[in-house]
Length: 129
Length: 129
DNA sequence: TTGACTCAATTACATTTGTAAGTCATCATC
DNA sequence: GATGATGACTTACAAATGTAATTGAGTCAA
Figure 1 (spheres, each protein chain N blue to C red):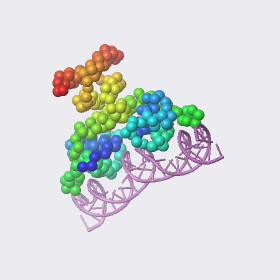
Figure 2: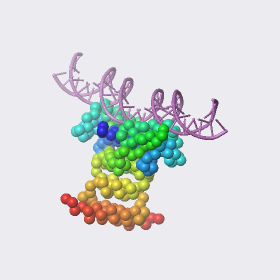
Figure 3: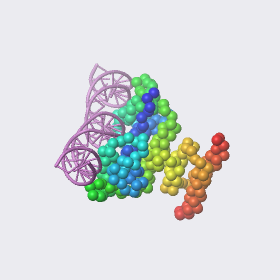
Figure 4: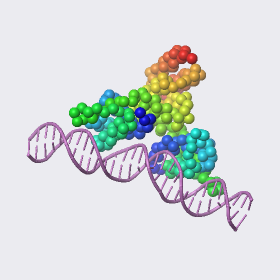
């Protein structure tokens, strides 16, 4: 397979809907757009087609409807996108992003608790190597 | 001022160099490109011009050299870019990104230590409201 | 059986982005 | 004072992106 080329913003937006629905027709995606998001049905068609062309989605025919489903795992797309962003904004270093997030975004005390647990688990599990 | 439009990847790359140098001529930016990054001098010129047009950089003339300096604070650009990414990838929720980062990226035990401290400070300081 | 719809497929088109070439002025040097 | 480097400024141009109109076929209800 040719090296996937990145997703544009609009494509990512649409891909996320397909991921959530775990496969969907153009119409389903169209109808799942958040209310503020006012784009044409045929625009959605275009994005889905491009996502398929780029190798991110599979298509199958259900009668005469195309049903799109994830091909590349969301996990993978997320990893790649985040990685690119870390490179671009922080020269590839994760810690500055972590600091940025902790300092600039909102967390409930429950969130903080969960984060602590994540860190605990990390340390516990970091016995390899 | 017109609402700044987002930065493209190439523009962000160049902007970061200007931030680091805290102001630089085209040539200085050009020479600060990492060795692998092989783009033309005039390409750098174009990116800097666009960054200025978009309102992200200031220019001043030093003799016949243009010296570009940050206009919008890096902090702000970072906040906006991260925010957009969180919206796009995680529907605006920060926690899933935090989990992703903790689970998918590498941290030294010192990093983990620092993160714990950040969280401590957060909780300590979260007395406002 | 004729609209009204729905959908697939194709085509369109302006804007943005990544990248650079061309032109003209200036400066330093030979 | 011709020549080479430097840089500003202008222009270029293909690819990617955001967005949609058009066309044509199939389906359903009246």
